[in-house]
Image (tube, rainbow, N blue to C red; front, side, top):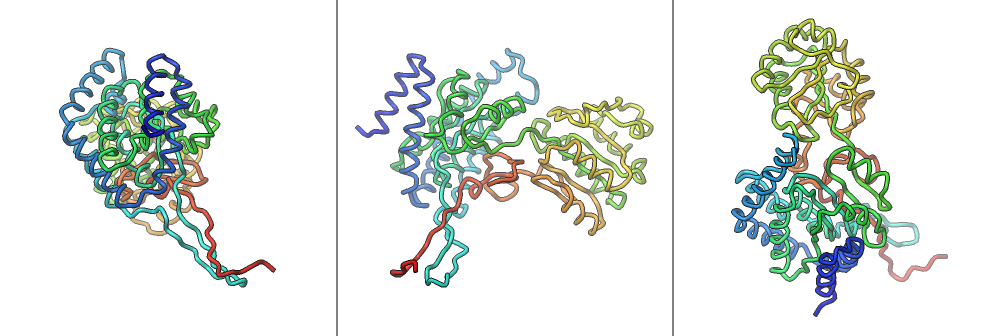
Length: 435
């Protein structure tokens, strides 16, 4: 019997006895061993594992949907709000997207082992940098069961073992998905401990996971602001995070009205419960009387509640008065704050004061103004003439994303394969000794 199998048996016994702390330590030990296994795994076996997991998910579609129905019913019974229920819900289209995401990650170039920045030194040695996995990644997330597969696929392809702790509201869905992952890994000869899904909804598991620097190298939280604030405050392991997504679209006076309408409507109404959804619309004063009534009619069709500044309400009497709190708000709901501004300077100043450095967009036909907006808006994604909803790993060609980082060290913006690696120096010599 292998050491990893022994760990799995031990973890099950600890879980049964209710010793959450010991259970999480056992998962950590198994993950550290699995990380060594993955460092030896070549690209081919990682890709085969992803394909095997995709096939398992496809075969388990009915079981996943049945489990998700249970989670949805439980969520409704416990008063989950509409945004969380939307994140929780699975259907055939979302399962198809999950399968496609796995297969797309399998087609992506493997960053592990890449060596770049090679240079000869005067001593004759060659110095470069090699991409290597981070090691063991702990991921804590709420609601979305699709994150289980996204996280597993990106960690696996980048050579990292991972411990995934999903939200209690998705426990039935995640259990079925976890079984698909384990079966797919074992099918190609990899240990199931390469991807471990925490099998308890006890909140003590989160506290344990973020306090195991001997076994976990990085924590990535995905969820509400309170969860991420807690993890950032209490973690003894480095954290890759963003707290919230207060995203803006600024419509400049030179904007094409047709493009502006389409972008502003899509940025708000495509999905309400995502971190890259627009929460505040800024409109340049000279075009406000042209743009805002058209937008208001479009938003009314989607039942979006409007909250505006005094100048907005003069044009849209149906809008509620926006308070100071509205400019800070991440609604994750069909609510939109609107402000009429006097030019790009006021727009940039507003974004700097109230934004969360996540994603902000400008709609303009002025190339110079677009370049200035890109340079001066300090966000992880700055978009010109397109919806904020494109700030996403899949749309950026990363295959999937582990999350979006508004930090400035190591990784920023959507975090894909490269963001889950680091670099170490490698040196090639031919007998040189230092003089």
